[in-house]
Length: 236
DNA sequence: CGCCAGGCCGTGT
DNA sequence: ACACGGCATGGC
Image (tube, rainbow, N blue to C red):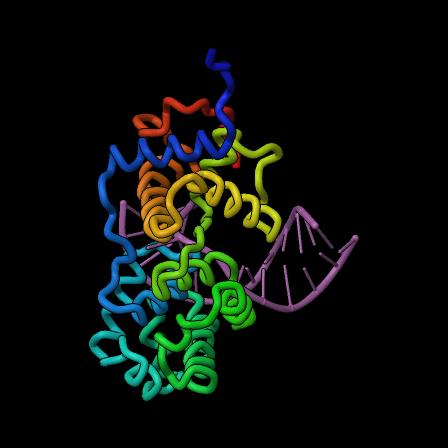
C-alpha cells in the first residue's frame, strides 16, 4: 500500500516550478546576445529594475562597449556615465573594470578560459571580486558560463518565506542564500545531471516572472499561479 | 509623489 | 553570526 505523506519542501518547490512552467512557458533566459552581455547585465541589475538595465546596455551598445575589447577601451569615467541609468554607478563601473582586469590578467581576456575552471574554484574567484555577491556570482556561472548552479534571488526568498517552505524564513545573508540554493538543488535532484543547468536556468527565470507580477514587497497575490500551494504569510 | 527594483558592502553589536 | 544603513537612478 502506498503511504500517504506530506510533501517535502523540495517536492513543493518542484511542484511550484511545474506550475510556473505551465503558466508562463519557456522563458529563454538570459535576455542577452552574448555571454559578456550577460555579465554586464548581472552587475547592472543589482537592486535595479531591468528596464533601467536596458537603458544602460543601450548606452554601452552605442559606445561599442558590449564586448571585452570595447569595454576595455572605455575610460572609467566614461563607463560611469554610460551605466548611470542603473544607479550605483560609482560602485558598478569600477566593479565591471575589476572583472575585466581579472579576465585579462588571469584568463587572457577570454570568457571561454574563465568558464573552463572548476565550478567551485570559479565561484570563489567571482565572489572575491568587488561588487560580486552570491546572486551575481551564480547568475554569471549559470547564464554566462553554463555551469549548473542554482540562482537564488529576493523573489525566491519571498516565495519560500511566504509559503513557509523553510522555517524559520531564510534571511538575506550567507546562510539564507545557501538554504535557498540547497532547496533548489534538492527540488531538481532527481532529474538527470545533464538537465540540471537548463532546469536551474528556467526555474530562476520563472521565479522572476512570477515575482515581478505577484510577489513584490507589497504583496499582491491575487491571481498568482502558485496560489494552490499553502500561503502562510505576506510578511517578508 | 512615494515606493520600489532580477544586491552588495562596511560597520556596529 | 546577524541587523542595519548607504549606495543612485528612473518607472509606475
